[in-house]
Length: 254
Image (cartoon, rainbow, N blue to C red):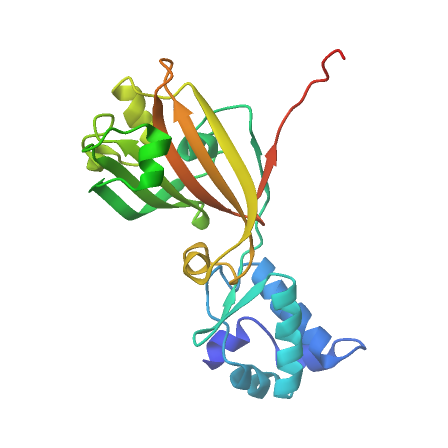
């Protein structure tokens, strides 16, 4: 533990650094360790008592420094688990005028993407899925639930539903759903989506590595084939600290 602590702060430097309260000096030391990568995203911060003993400060001093970093979003407290590092997120601008997949969008930015499967299979549809997809009685629905990750940072939870005749084998989808739909000539050409603000629940916060109650963007989208048939019903949750959705508008003659 001593080696781990010495890698992120120096008691001698902390005590000798200029004027100002000790908790501010400690806060700056921890912030520097996060921003320089000495403490990585998702890494657990050493317990307050260990930090206090190593830095030769009181636990009150440690708590005030940690509180400040939690408020700034660089640390996150998880009840019963500890305090964890939150890597600063570069905000992404997502235009609303193009219908693209997460994989395609991140690839254009040069990001390395991967997904963690939360759900994948054929199910009896819910009333909402039947209505949004226009399913007939007796039809099954393919569900794909994924945690979307770019450059090893979880960015979104995406849950897509499609009629089973459109996607009879959900396990045929590897990383990009739209690539599979393009292969079978079922890629949508237009979509209607609704965006609303929300607070991230405890379950979703654990997946996205954000504090419970953090701001999120909930998106519900129905995508259509050229024939007008609804092909995809997707409900997504994006991290509010990572995304800006941008729409271009034109002024028409009055």
